[in-house]
Image (cartoon, rainbow, N blue to C red; front, side, top):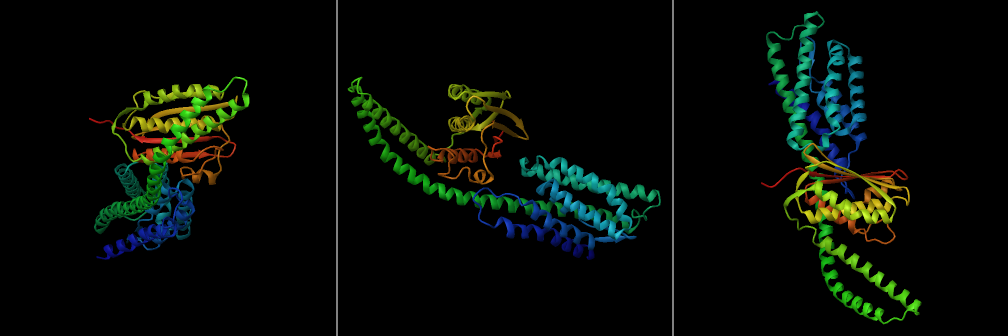
Length: 428
């Protein structure tokens, strides 16, 4: 009964920081997808770990057992290397201050399970729920195994008391069960809160896009028909312009170019209005990307931009081929227009990784600031002189409806890299 009380206390130490993080950080309105606050993760995981150390689950022959490893694991996987290092340093400082048998044991066990956590952290956010659960239980069980093995070894040297006989054996089993249970509960709470925050952002964004889509569809259809008629008559009038009337010819070409630009804007609006309709078919991304590359080569040559490709064979997904083609034409066109003339370079890489196909486009253009990166995908936000900003809005939405993600990395003067991740699959 006492052990259950201690477990409830430890669960409070573990879950209270999780819900506090949600209240302080994830409840705020986001203009872009919710991001991690690594400093806040460290700030909350440190007291959680120290409280677990101060009030252990049980003590056997002056050897105490607790769940401080869970905040350490969480800080590494969700906060990254610096957050994890801060929590590890706090735990070791506490151990040095308290001394006792666990100081030596911590120096042996902490490097083992933290290195395992650091290894998985690099790909943590690309894992699905099931894989995350398997990984976190693997780390927890590895931590238990190295701890109990070290205790047995240290006891054989006479460095720690015997904890494997009598009541000690029972508490060792209880400690192992409690660790796995607490790991599962903490991980579930964190993932549930993260998904809710992302879903809330998507709902708000989709509501705005839905209103915009309805307006776009009604306006675009009404405006496109008279534009088509006007363009046709201007073309007929242009045929009657004499060769020596250069000024009239210039006016004629200017009017046609502006009408074409109006048509492009209307096309963007119509794409926005139809973005929710996604056909499902087997799509070879390998052939699709080669097709997009060939289509955009002439435009790249006109801009004197060099394109390099590295595309794996056999990349297959389930989706709408025409929509995906629109996505990659848009992204490649943006990359070509962002690089300088004569020395412009764009690289296209496509490869499979962790159940996803990654398509990465890198350019050596002028780059973007952090504020500009945050606003990418917003309707009407554009860095071009002539543009609506709806192209990327549609692109983001298409990728989202395919169950994928799109991530930009850029610095001013350092070029831009965009990575599209789409789940691997095929219809049977």
